[in-house]
Length: 366
Image 1 (cartoon, rainbow, N blue to C red):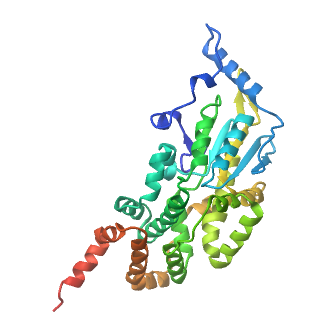
Image 2 (image 1 turned 135 degrees about the vertical axis):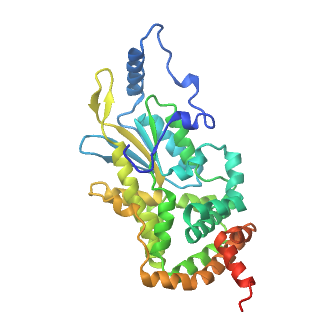
Image 3 (image 1 turned 180 degrees about the vertical axis):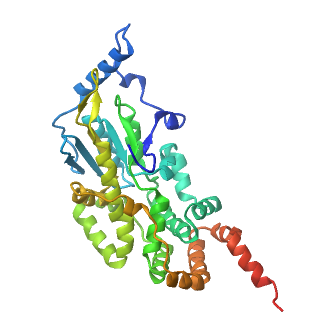
């Protein structure tokens, strides 16, 4: 796929950690076949396995392209066992050419870890994570990312379940389908965070940080499953739009556009053996249920991807205000992050900018 984030994941990149399909999932081959003959046999086997009228879960939305390609969009809840089952059922039934997941290269590591390791990682917000987030996204965006990680850790603690199970399930099942490619379909997370922070006013940043900091409401598996109900989810989205419309635009609506773009790219015709004839593709997309309505709305529209990949520089007035109030903002976000992790204070103190500021304060002026 022609994307900025190098979205296709090769088997070699993840083979050491995830592994591929078991030997018994592949059909036996007659002896003495040439490579081209073996390819043709595998293609025929997959064609025979593919169901033309599959009975799929209610969470699956079917989209088509003018060329006749089909996209089966699986809407998931990110902490849901039943979502994992929906993904596996869909991939086994339609035997896709491509599987696209709502991940970017910055989050691909969750495909490499087992559930136990991921559960530990999701609960642990340590100094290294704080420093990495700040280095990758800048101070403001990095600290906001840590607060969102804190929310994820809170849900993980409540449910005892690591996030991203549906994506790991998708990768595992894609490895069992002959010729199936696996693509990362989401916008790079540093772009999303930088655009989100740039879109918020200083007051909105403070309110958001404060709200995330003190998030402690209990959550159950039943609550998670409700996130798969489109009407309830749209109501929740509407409430969030009223509170932080700019945040909804950058984190949800813009990513709806990006995901639509990557899904349409994946749905381009594929070459069928033995004569490389162009035939319509079958694609399975695995995304959060909150993105499904937006992808449906954008499916037949002309999309401007470059517009949502840039981060606009701040105005001169904004630059002045930001520098005047940056110390106060750091203090607020630093305190909020301290609530999320004991190591955040040390991370802030390790920043060259903060160290320089402290040196200036300690040095007497004459």
